[in-house]
Image (cartoon, rainbow, N blue to C red; front, side, top):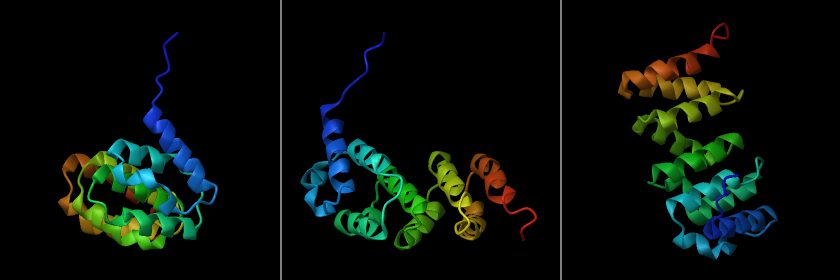
Length: 154
């Protein structure tokens, strides 16, 4: 019997997601220039599961997503990039993983990489470099994620 909250702002973002998914260029999303962090997060997590390399490049070029300094927005973008194997975002992913210590960001990104055949090697390489920089709480969480899939395959 709880009232389901509705947000007019996020409903407009949903319309922008639909417009982009239907083939409109990223530059056609005029309202994005004034979006809050939450609007960007909603947009990125609401994108279709699969996007073409051209769509990803258009988003990245138009909104400079791989260059974002906002960790929440960059994190959401990097998950989209990993899911779609968007290689141009991989340097940003490595920078993020070697400069960010928060488990809320690290765990999902390493898990996403380790779920892919192509990302496991990168995950292990980046983790080996970044592990000494992480807090013990993070390494306790990440060690099994990054090493479990590697057992028996090295």
